[in-house]
Length: 487
Image (tube, rainbow, N blue to C red; front, side, top):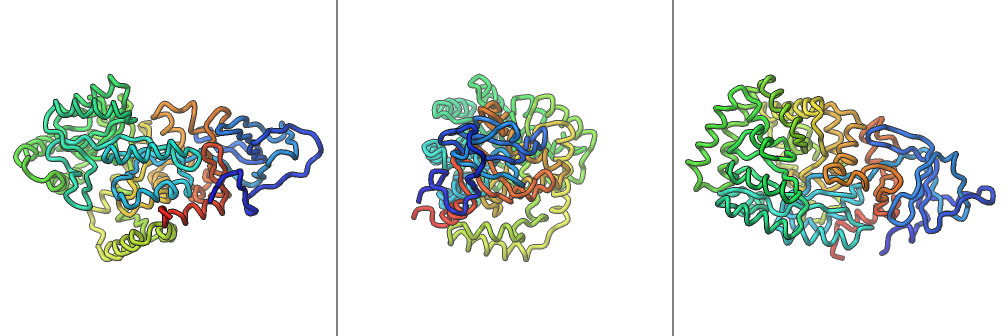
């Protein structure tokens, strides 16, 4: 079945406006008039007309300034709101390889037009990047890091279903140099450093990345503190991972303890050793949170422009319990049947688990820290880590925006984290992230105003990807297709 403007259905929100003869004609264009445009930094501009021709936005102008010929295909945007297409800046195509074939449709159906894959075997993730590039009008833009660059023992080594082979274990500095060169030759978009790297390995990875014009995102290695990693060249942090360890009053003691454990238990499995260290130190660090220490750490992150991808929906999933919401229940109906059943069983088990006092305190710490990060003017990008923690691709980004607002961002500030900020991160702010002339036409048309209520990002009337218009009924069919992606 074909989708897009060229195959408009009767249910499309479109009216061939019967107006006076004359007016401007835009061949083969989408003309959306009387719509409110959302700028993720400046706010709302009402009663605008947007002309989309080919893959780009040709014109954005007050509707009163432009008389359209009835020969145009005109979409009535009265009472509607249009915003830039959304980014999910932390996804994993390789975490559940059997779900990957459904992810393009899930993303598009929920208005996510660009994603940043943050770790997986290079051939696998590059395949999805190439598939997206080959079909830009019906697939999200995909940016990739390739495998996690980890030390030895590495965490995601394929030893369990919860630790699929997302990483490469690098035994030496020389091995790190070789792998960075290899990934650069394969044209990854950035690199991702992981928790078991030595300081020497991390430093050379960051140095080489800078020379090659690549950013380094990742987790702060357990052998380092946050200030050391930021100063060495960490461009962005995922999940605020290990930030709490550097914001404790006994941070120096905790670092020394970690370094000793990493040496003493270097023959342990990477996932087990990492979990042991987290279990030993995370609760202690949160209990010993020191405001002065945190301010010092955040000042360095701000100075070095070390961005944050907090993945708050992940960090709070056992307290906010997204899996108990109707929107989540609706979203898993679009998953392949075996996966939907598996997730439903997992939820049944999660509902029986008590929410521990530490889980509550860690969620509170995460929310409060994001508020401080925002107040310190450190840039934030919205990412989910889907499909980890039962976070449905697509739907989970809307959950992430809601939790960012819960943490203290305004709805407009939350929208910025999923639109213009990722574009700036990839130096694409002249191409994406705004409803502006000359930009790629990646847009979401909404029935309600998300600046008033962030939940309204889910009131999707249409998605425009690379200039191709998908109405509500088409999006529903795309989501249904995700259930059986190979048919």
